[in-house]
Amino acid sequence: MVSIVLLLLACLGLSLVVALPRTVVGGRRLFLVRVLFPSWRFFESIGVVARLYVREVDGERGYQNWTPALKAPPLSWSNLFFNPHGNLYFAQQSAVEHLVSEIEESEEGGSLIEHSPAFALVHSIARDSIRSGVASANGSLSFSNGFQFKVSLLDEDGVEEDLMISPLLSARVSS
Image (tube, rainbow, N blue to C red; front, side, top):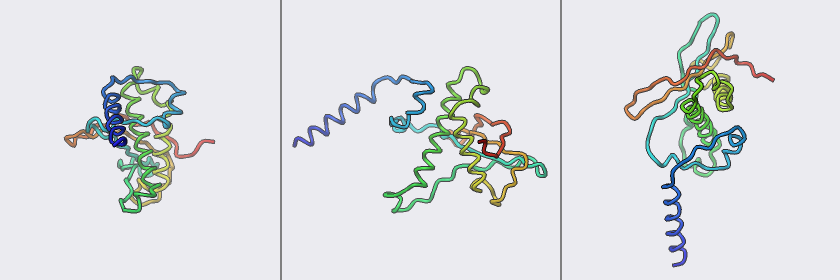
């Protein structure tokens, strides 16, 4: 009986917290510790979906076609208990969505976005997806001239709109 009352009180408290107005807290220091604070915003509504695409830029073949950089891992019952590939996929998708929110909140335009931590994370995700062959049709890329990535938004009606296309980037890891 006591546990039911505690459960009802917890649900009431959670519903009151969800009803409070949201404030956006920003800053470079807070960005580093945002992983420690869960976000429950994904329960609010179904909205646009951010997608990350990459393409190789080769000296001989020129610009290649855009291919999805993030592929969801296959589902199985064992993933319910141990799912490192699924966790990586969700972390990468979260980084893309964080970049989208930074682009939408940016008042200065796209030039400063390229220096943000979210851009650096997505750049690394895109580079790694090309290097691992996830985004490649043939699995072997030469990286003679570099690569690009773009972030697109897919709405509820299935209409996809490009939000950002990166400049030509080097595939080499800088040390």
